[in-house]
Image (tube, rainbow, N blue to C red; front, side):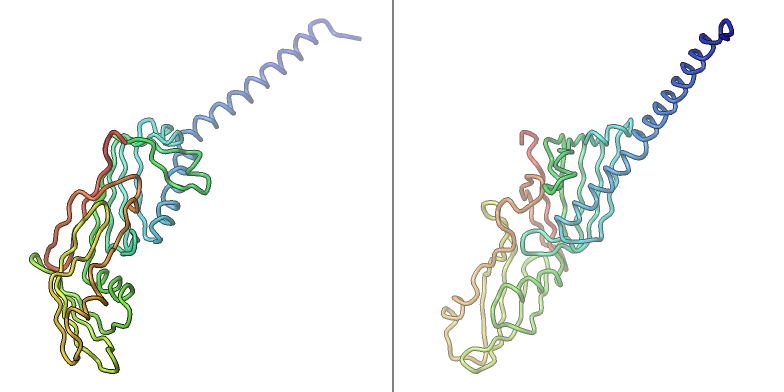
Length: 245
């Protein structure tokens, strides 16, 4: 026997149950958009940035309000610090990245393409190349030299090394500067001296010459080098992205 009103009672119970479930799902969605998804976006950004710079020493802070905007790739404030990050052929002792109102390509971020910036109101990079960083890249780029030592000051970069030339160990001394040229970063040699060899300096210069440290378009996010400053013990690079890009 059907009790009057029982059908209505069951339908009402199911409706309340459905509304409760929908409410819980809505709460989970809100919490996820404010906590889980932003955390996932920041964690993925940090991992992909480190992969691109060939370092695991990466600290990243992404800020937006509401934080759910991070899940859409909209970053109001970006701060990142990387150590021993690779740019072109040279490792940087420290690389800092600052951005404002940056829009990321989120599908690309979660695919193999990695970090891609679609646009940014402001995006700047500052990198520090110390004496050890420069010594390492020169040792790697120049064949047949060893015992490389580098001294950097505001006026010049002094490089001393040994090289085997026709069976003799020659003492090499180079002076130069780090300069930007057409989007590339170079060690420009301004002086070359040698001892304990019969080869002329000009001939020996063919073995060395200007050394490319970064090729064009190797800076991240479409940035361009704006300033190269030599200080005592390090070279400071400043790069930025054109707003129109």
